[in-house]
Image (cartoon, rainbow, N blue to C red; front, side, top):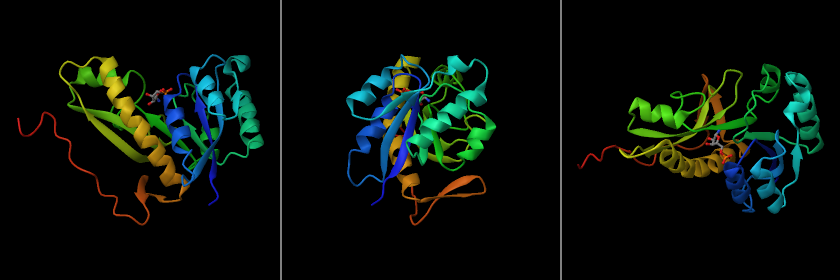
Length: 220
Ligand code: GRF
């Protein structure tokens, strides 16, 4: 099996990056985490990547000021140097230009801590609690120029508890993120995703959902 060469782009903690690295340790996993790039030298995830033996690069956006194209030209060079085929954004806190996103169209995933298309943008857990939703979660989606709007590959849902704070809810969602991101990357790397009418369709499976999540419990 030829494994796809993947770069994970981070800005911080890197727990999703670690979940991807762990998944890719399985020799049957169709992708290899060939590179971790951070736009911040102090990102905690860099240390975890190094400990896992994954090559790391820092492309510090601050050096290029407001010039996104220059930042991306350097990023592109780094990706080319490492012969990267797919990109996973994992807590990468820079907006990418339309040109960059279009160039990587169909080859770049992002993870967002909400059930898209609800709660695009930042502070998703605070807004979910303020909105009184009973079910919240995370989504892995293709990156398109419009933020948090690309075709959805996979979602994971969690129950919102009455005594949840943004912190407790974030932790429950994060556990789901760590499951769906490796799964979504597997589907992409295996070439099992087709995009039809702006939606992801799985090739060769019925893609049936596991079960219903009803909150509060329907048995209450
Ligand atoms: C995650 O909640 C992810 O959904 C969001 O940023 C956070 C990154 O966390 N895009 P980590 O760096 O992967 O731990």
